[in-house]
Image (cartoon, rainbow, N blue to C red; front, side, top):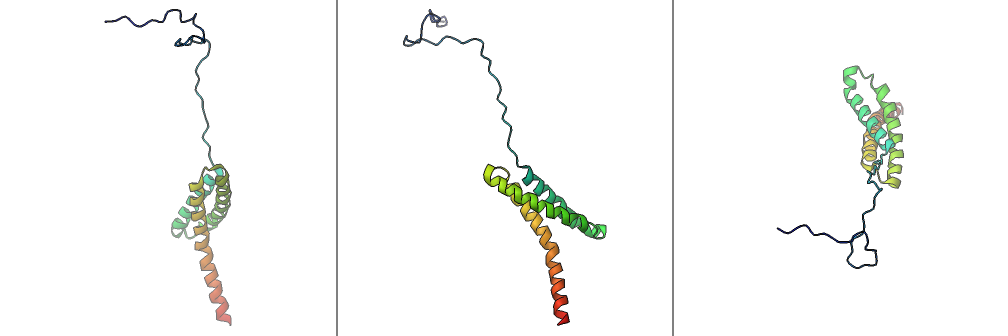
Length: 129
């Protein structure tokens, strides 16, 4: 068994000596770098409002259609938040999927209400002519 290899005069060898190991530096502590993850709050808010509004619309027959008065404003505000979050995701690159999910849910919710209203208005308009 060989003894561990020792480097004589490690402290004395300067940077000009070829093959010398650098001397250890004391007093520097290694730290942990904490980087905060980016988030897109508007995209998240739009998606959450879309999920809540769609859930209330699905449950509205059980609640005598009273949820429509709550789900439509939620879908409208969710649509606004989703559009803001989508434009933010283009610049930051964060939250694109959440913004698109919020856009789909909120626009679908609004179209599910406005298409029957327009159909009823159209039927009423053509019946008077």
